[in-house]
Length: 172
Image (cartoon, rainbow, N blue to C red; front, side):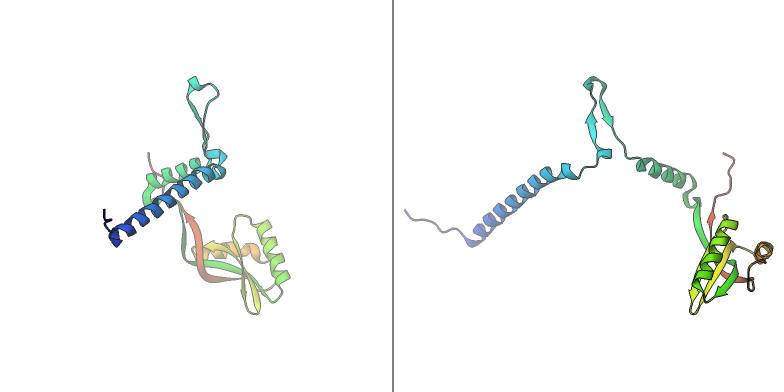
C-alpha cells in the first residue's frame, strides 16, 4: 500500500483554515468575557422585577439632547441657528504692557456688561482688551459712550465678529 503525497497547496490551505478558526474562536471568547465589563449602566436593558410587565429600558439622557438637535435641523434645515463670522466692529478699551492691568479691566468689563463678549489679545509687547461684536460702526459708537471712564483712549476697530444667527419667526 503506497501513500499518496498531499500537494503543498492543500497543506497550506488546511493550516490557514486551522489558524483562522483558532483565532476566530479566541476573539469570540474574549469578546463574550470582556464586553460585560465595559457595558454602561445607563444603556442596559434588564427584565422588570415582574416579568409579566415586559422590559424596562434605561436610556442615556444625552439621547434626548440629540433628538432635540435633530428636530431643529429637520425643521429648519440649513436655517438652523448657527454661529456666523463676518466683518464688523469692536471697541478697544486699553492697550498696555501690563498683563495684570489688562486682566483687571477685562474682569471689570465682564461684571459691568455681562451681555457683551470681551477679548484679550497679545501682540508683542501689548495686551489689548476689546469688547463687543457690533455689525455697524453706529452700534459701536453708541456703546462706546459707556466706556469713557476707562484710562487711555477708547476707540473703534474693524475686526472679524461672531454672533448667533437665528431663523426668522415663521407663521406655523
